[in-house]
Image (cartoon, rainbow, N blue to C red; front, side, top):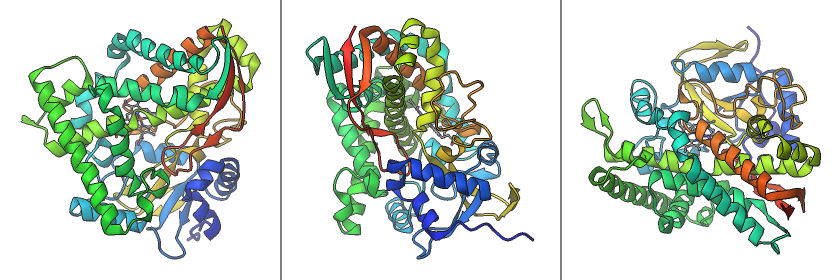
Amino acid sequence: MASVPLVPAEVGRAVIDPKSYGAWDPLLDQFDDLRRAAPVARIVAPNDEHEPFWLISGFDAAMKVSKDNATFLNNPKSAVFTLRVGDMLARSITGGSPHLVESLVAMDAPKHPKLRRLTQEWFMPKNLSRLDAEIRKIANEAIDRMLAAGDGREGEGDFMSLVAAPYPLHVVMQILGVPPEDEAKMLFLTQQMFGGQDEDMNKSGLKDLPPEQISAIVAGAVAEFERYFASLAAERRNNPGEDVATVIANAMIDGEPMSDRDTAGYYIIVASAGHDTTSASSSGAALALARDPDLFARAKADRSLLPGIVEEAIRWTTPVQHFMRTAAADVELAGQQIAKDDWLMINYVAANHDPAQFPNPRAFEATRPANRHLAFGAGSHQCLGLHLARLEMRILLDVLLDRVESLELAGEPRRVNSTFVGGFKQLPLRWKAA
Ligand code: HEM
């Protein structure tokens, strides 16, 4: 039998190092080398800091794993990469589950499709079109904020903090029925909750604390979320509206109301999956337009280019950089023998830069034919919010192109150091108002 392709220790370390995703190009080079050698290869931590896993860097294998939801499961082990210390922390908080939050990404059939079905219709384009005007209003407010950072005619500032970060957050909070005065609290709780598990997402200073204290803070954030959403759900049961918050609050599973933990998990996944992802791809689109005046001029004159630009920005940025799966049975994948219970990383960054699928993958090509990327995943967990994300981006770019005459880079963009949700944390732009 052929020997197992082992990823060299320093490359394995780079794949799980948040800073690699901040640096980007050297990591893409490493993925190219890895993919050429073996699109599915094994990473074993030299000091056992994490459970060994199979890294999937080839597009075809990533698609296969994503679509085979009977063989590759989300629930048995963490669906997001975590070191052993993070895994132990989650299990100590939850009483044994590797998932801090009981959300869609932590579930498999038969529970997953039952919960997913509840909101599937709500997130379809037909229903979302009702939100068009409201989203456009929020996009205009974001561009107002940007233009106000200049003298009205021209200006310079960080597109991320002025526009790309607050805009999707505001949209998602609106559909969840969270009032504007509670948005800061939601952000803070999200950061605390993720902060204990993954130090690169830690914006609340947790990483220097002893484990018991981290554990208490993370558990406190989860409990606070559950309390907040239990009361929001109770409110929506009394006063139903047309938002997704109402759908979740009134959901029945097998004739019973959803448990508080499932209800909170549903709100939390929509709240957390719905903002920094779309922020990242929106700033990716703005960067591409700022770097390419010809593309900017063509898009300004012809908005039918927007869907292509949006799709390419999502592939090119790949905001969600990985998800993990656990094998339910022994199975062969791209010539490798995967054993039952093995952990696998679908690396979307690597898959979306596979030259066999995307010629010249590092280039931004607004008219890439059949841009069948994996940034939204595939199979039964494929992003529930993909139509909303595309709609938000299309509207934002439409408003931006209406109100801005030109756009250019005013400094070096900086990427987030994160293995999970990446993208840009700073995007300095200079603009002239239209
Ligand atoms: C460009 C923006 C976005 C990207 C790149 C993105 C990416 C992803 C990915 C890769 C997955 C996992 C897919 C898989 O396992 O096959 C996912 C799941 C999910 N996303 Fe998104 N997402 C985005 C925006 C949104 C938005 C706006 C929402 C909702 C407001 C959302 C809600 C969800 C939910 C609820 C899931 C879990 C689905 C399930 O497990 O059944 N996402 N997303």
